[in-house]
Image (tube, rainbow over all chains, first blue to last red; front, side, top):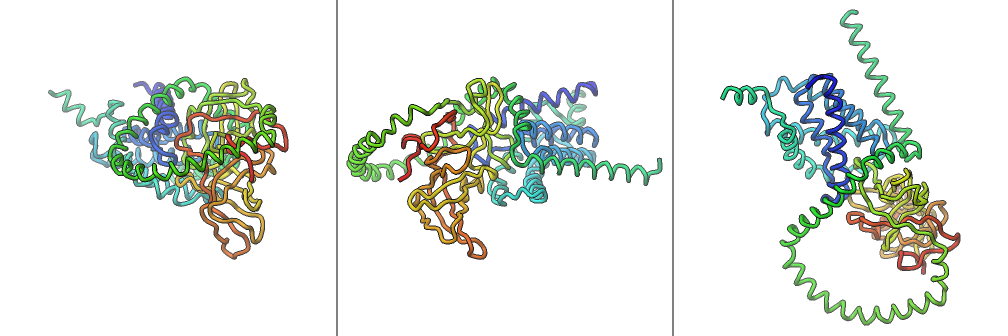
Length: 169
Length: 289
């Protein structure tokens, strides 16, 4: 995919993810327990990006989430941007596969993201109950663990080694 | 440029970005009409897809719920049989209450009062993508007469108020939202205070009472006070489950469970216009004792 096409691809993908997250999932999951599809998308895409690309895709995903929410503009932009950058920076050191790595990174990201946003909200003077983070966290982590690899598979993202193996056959 | 200089430049850039984002978050923590309008336009643009997904989700949700319920059905069946006996007894009691209610309604002339209310029915098409605040988008907007500030209700009680509109959609801030702030009174003792969202996960509301020693007890119904510019007087909000003193014992707060089930919020009613100094009839959760 050409470099100029990637941001368009991300925007379309994130828009679809947001629609599923805001319209479809609330019908299945109870209030407060709706999993973040955007987080899984940022994680799985950042695993195949350069640090700059990871930062950019995190910022785009976060900004779209903030804009659709219409409040606390910047919260997801900042946290998703940092998340994309960190994952993309460290991913060359990790052993890539299609299931374990996306699952573990997705689950860990979910584990960190909730408390990080909670802390940030406290810093800006928007205190929210810790229970809002702690109660749904196990469910959201489990969802990310299972859903993030599935997103990667749906998008057809495969590590280089697996691609070359397939090509060699 | 030297390596040190480049690092410093990056650090400064990161600091500026963080400062900008924190300022933006602080400014947009409470709903602002102009900002919410942008999200409304986005929601309008994707509303046909959102509506379809919401419909699919409702069907999927029904199937998922049905499968989940299989395990508890047997247990529930036994409990229901014993409850049925209780309900038969209650039915007789209710018949009497309904008779009384009908008489009271005619006496009070509530039917005439309802004539002055302008209501618009709307469907919920999407929810907020963030867990930190609670808003929903409904499929009626300014073209149906919806405006920011109007209250949103269902038969069980108050849902929230409109905070932003586009021609075809409106964003509703639920009473579960930490910034909701609903002026309310205890229906029994008339003790007044402000209700706000405490925790969307538990769904509880915090009722901060104004009086030093308010007469509020668990089980009391809480209704809107009518003091705020948004909510008409007398709409049912919920029921008190717990009363606690604050840290230094100067004031009391109560925990209120909302009367509305926000997990199954599909259709709502927007109050476009209501005559002042009137409450809604009991069918909409209104009517103080």
